[in-house]
Each structure stands twice: as structure tokens, then as C-alpha cells.
Image 1 (tube, rainbow, N blue to C red):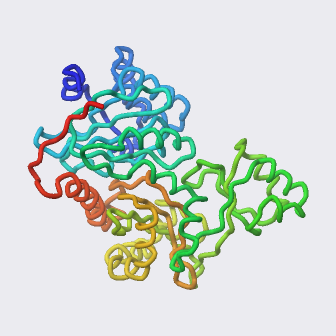
Image 2 (cartoon, helix red, strand yellow):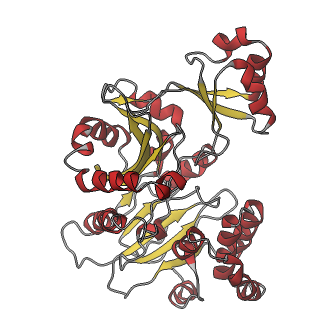
Image 3 (cartoon, one colour):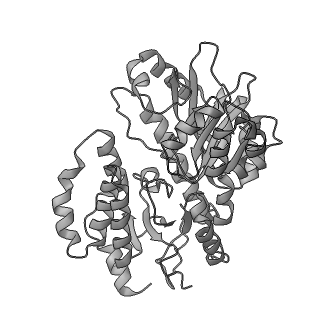
Length: 416
């Protein structure tokens, strides 16, 4: 690493950062108050200001503008200090790629209070691969499993092949988290249920909409009702339950996507008629619950009005968190062990539920699900302790993996 780069990292301009901005957005605070000062700094080619502006624009649902600002920032520099700590603290190098808020693991939220020195390096098709990097004790690959990232993950795997310090979430293993590949990998695990999931073109769906008799050939292996969503979408974006082939036409009229995931709809309602969905992360193979949503609707988002309006549902979530290790985690221990073994990743997130016959029903695997400690403590007082447990486990994993034998081992400066 050049002296100029080292000085730039050590004396970076002020930044707001992902964790603070997400917290403000979650509280419905006016993010536009930051714009005048950030724009003034950005006009002086302050890359950190551009990075914050990019985040704010995305959180204000101006995605394309935000991505343009991110590209502008990365033209100035690819390396950013996102976590300050003394020189003797653990040094973590996080590798990201340009994209929206789902493009990378939100490490800033996971390590907000960990006391580590954290640098983020952006790599991608239009970005050069650095010949030198700052000193670090380990690498964490934050790039998500999206189809658009497959090539950069392959390149990154070659780049990190003989790294002299630990690399967590090896890039070659990340693409297997995609819906289709995950289904294939886990299809023979009796403890796990996943909907049969296929990739189809818009043309195929249009053919089924025009002629329902084409469903068997255009949508092999799945049957109505189905769940449809565009490839690359998350958080329920353009995700719908389609009851009949005739309903596909109306769905397609509302999206311009060209390729889709289509999956069987699995009814996971409990005997009381409510749907319960869990966000769980595996950290070094151990499961931790991050939230439990309870809803009258099959598509459960969190947090949402049904949780804030019903104290009994919050009480159930609190009980779930308090007893998770001895209840849910124990009941599904075989499923979690299979997931950890089949993917071989250090950190995996999933949205899941439980079927009527007691199996783990997995909707989605991802390494970039939003995991945070920003819920309203007045409404969710039990969440703080649980998230301290989750974030502590993540930080503890990094600390153990970086210094397994000698806690005082020096960081390594890489020239590659």
C-alpha cells in the first residue's frame, strides 16, 4: 500500500455510513437534511461524501441516481475506511462490489460496535484490481450471490487463491446460494423443504398466460398456484402468488423483467391461520434468529403494522428469541447442519418457516440480508439483547478466525 493511500485511510473525511443512515431511515427521519453539506463536499471530489450521497439517494428510492453517485465515488477511489479503531485492533478487509443495498453483506451494521479497524475494497468489471492493499488480519467477502456477480466472484476467487491470511465466505461458494442452485444442493435433505424453483423467460410466461395448456411444458415441475418473482429481486419486490395461468397476464403487465423465478406455493399457515416467518443467520455453522414475523398474509415482511399493532405477537417473538437455542434451533438442528455443510460458508442468512409436518421450509438463502440492531426499543425491548448476541457472534467469529493461535499476531500487508 502506498503512503498516500495509507494516509488517506487514516485521515478520511467525515462520513455518515450505512449503519447510521439505515437507522435514520428506519426512524423516518428526513435524510435530505444531509444533502447540502454532502453536495458541497462532493463538488470538491470528496469520495466519502459521494458514498454517503449514493446511500441516501437509494434510501430515498432514487436507485439509479444513487448508483450513478456510487460510480462517481469509485472513480476517485476504491478503498474506504468504514470502521475506525486503534492500530492494535483487529484489521478486517471487506471486499464489496458496486450495486444497490442488496449487493453486499451490510458489514457496517454487523460490526458497528465491534471495535475493529475495517476497510472496504470495491471490485468489479469496470474497476482495476489493486496491486497493493492495506494491512489486514483477515478478508471477509461481502459480495452477494446475484447472477450479475458471478463473473466478479470467479475473478475474486483467483485473486484470493493463495492469500496468506484467512478468507471468510470464499467467493467461489457464494453463487450456490441462488434459489435454483440451493434447491438442487438441498433436494435430498429430508429435514428441509424448499419449493421446486425454476428459471423461466418472459416469453414462456406469456405463452402460459395465452394458453394454459402450455403450463406443463413451459413450467416443468411446478403447479399452480405458483410464486413468481423477477430474477435478482429481494424483499418481496414484484413477488406475487399467481393462482391460475390466466392471472399471469396481469402480473406481466406490471413488470418489465425479462427472466423470472417460478416456484410452487407451499401453504405454511399454522393451525391458528397465521403465517410465521423467521430470519435466521448461520455464523460459523451456528443458527441465530434475527426476527420472527407473524402475519395473516403469506408474504410476511418485518417490521410491519401487524407486529406493531399486536402486543401478543411481539410477546411470541420475544419468547421465540428467549428459547430459540433449546426449541427452534434444536428441532431443526439436522437442517442447519446440512445447510452449513452443503454451502461451506462462514456466514449465511435465510428467510424460513416451519411446515405442518415439522420440516424447515426455506424461502431464500442470501449472504446480504439486512441484519441490524435498529428496531424501536420501546416496541421491541427484547430485540436489543438478541441482536447483541448475533453481532457478538459475528465479531467473535472474525476474531477467532483471524488469530486462532496467537491473539497478538501481526496484520499482513499484501502486495499482489
